[in-house]
Length: 145
Ligand SMILES: [Zn+2]
Image 1: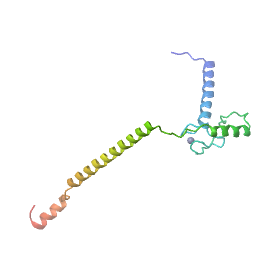
Image 2: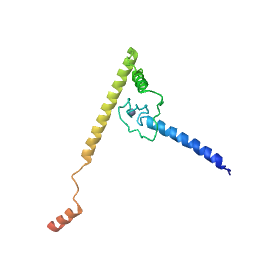
Image 3: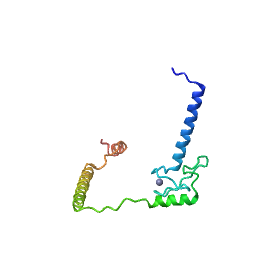
C-alpha cells in the first residue's frame, strides 16, 4: 500500500499537467498523417493539407523567432535534400528486369487460374431447379409430380 502525501500528489499532478501540455503542443504542431512539422498557418509541407491550430495551445515554435526568422527556417526546411533520383547499375537494372518478368508471369498465371475457375463455375451453374411452388403448379396442371 502506498502512502501518498498531499504535497507529493500536487507535485505529480503539476508534472503531469506540464507533460500533457507539452504532448498536446507537440501533437498540435505535427501533421497527423506524416508527423512533419506544420507551418505557422497549420499547413503540412509534405502532404499539403491544412490543419486547424487550436488557440489554447501555444505554437511549438520558439516565440522569440521573428516572422523573418520563421520564413528563413521554412525556406531551409523546403531546401533540405530530397531523396536523390535513383540511377540503377547494370546489375540492378538486370535484377529489376527479372523481377518485372517474374511478376508478369505471376499475374498471367493468376489470371489463367481465375479464368479457369470462372469457367468451372459456369459449368456448375446448371439450369435453375424449379421451385417448390413451380413443382406444385406443375402437379396441379398435369396431375403428375
Ligand atoms: Zn502531412
